[in-house]
Length: 398
Image (cartoon, rainbow, N blue to C red; front, side, top):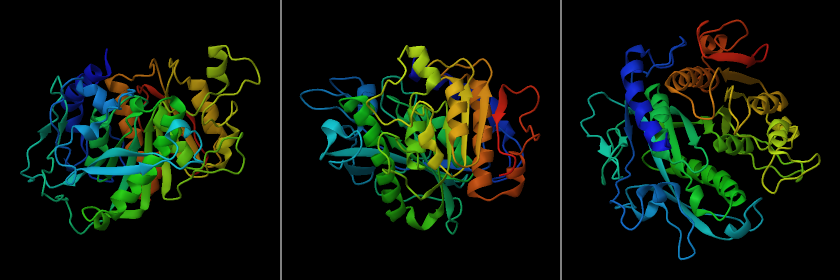
């Protein structure tokens, strides 16, 4: 199944199965369902692509005559969240991007009143599958559920060669539970290599936080002391790097962003560990030419903030054994839930459980919800005995 088809199927089924399970925002009961808030989004109005598939712009595409990227489809740049990211000459992995500036598009999803009259916006791609909920149009400001509240913020870094619309359902789930959610359209395909895309990713997330926290539409509605990060697949590498993970080959060089207080990873790639290296047939002592925490993940000992990972039992891209080893190497409290029978792409039931764990984790560590923390303690088993997820690692206290 293609990523696009998978997303559409997941959205339809999740909408039918999960909506009735909603609970109060921040409530520390186990639920895979959406929260009580309607969700709205920032403006990302675009024109239909011509000359190349829309997917090439959403994911990015490297071309000698000029790369393709989403900002080229945006109809009103001033109304859209676009940040120009400068790649320093000495940034690890910068390669052929060193010294260049690249645009990065963001979308923000946030809690909104159920009476929000703004219609959804169907993004103009070939299938018409992606809808931004209650999207602001040019000239409009956000309509928050509580204009006086300061919400915790979660920033999302998606998988390699994916795009923000693919992850839309996951991000709406978080926003419905009372979070401002920032999605970064990395455009990995427009970079000349994987190392460069890794470098741009860490810079893009930093720049996205700077932009949103200073933006007049969001600055007074976000609590900058309660910021989390969530990453899918390669996004796990991005988040762990920004939480303090370091490359043993570059001792003393940290790319940590101290604003991020807690991190969550879905099938999180943490560089090649021993399980992946063995599966690839790499010889002992081999080195890899991109940002890596070491085959034994020793570079994660400097990650002292809470980390929660969900792995797939049958995942060959990011082996469950490596996810567990990486979490054990983390210097702070870490959890691992392994989804039975799942590969690198989860089915609807596994995605729903992952959403449940994510909401509980961020409620515990961004909202300081004591009851949510209790659901993360040994023996709590909030997902129930029939759950696909099995807890493989958790701290005695958190």
